[in-house]
Length: 154
Image (cartoon, rainbow, N blue to C red):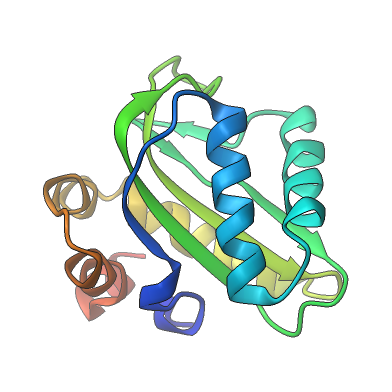
């Protein structure tokens, strides 16, 4: 699975201006609603339910909120680079500035877990995270997320 299968340039936010975890999830749910055709409210509620189980903030400024939703035909990804890092209850206590939202069909099973693992490995690659933090253009961010080197590292 390539990240280009999950995300399009429309799903990349180069400079998200939010001040809280809840606000970030709301904004990403809105965009996810547009990209997937699902209700942004349903997306937001699914993300909140998942966060109640434990934070999806992995550490090192990275979060991967995710959930399964009825009505999805395939996996979808949304990436946001935050203007200002926010508190996200991350495992290491650091604020988050890179968020990759992953949505999966209810029946995704192993594909959902494989996609989560791939995104996690890619974002935890220090050179990829540095490139993402240093880019402010949607097309540049998309290129970094989908470049073959990032896929191999993942």
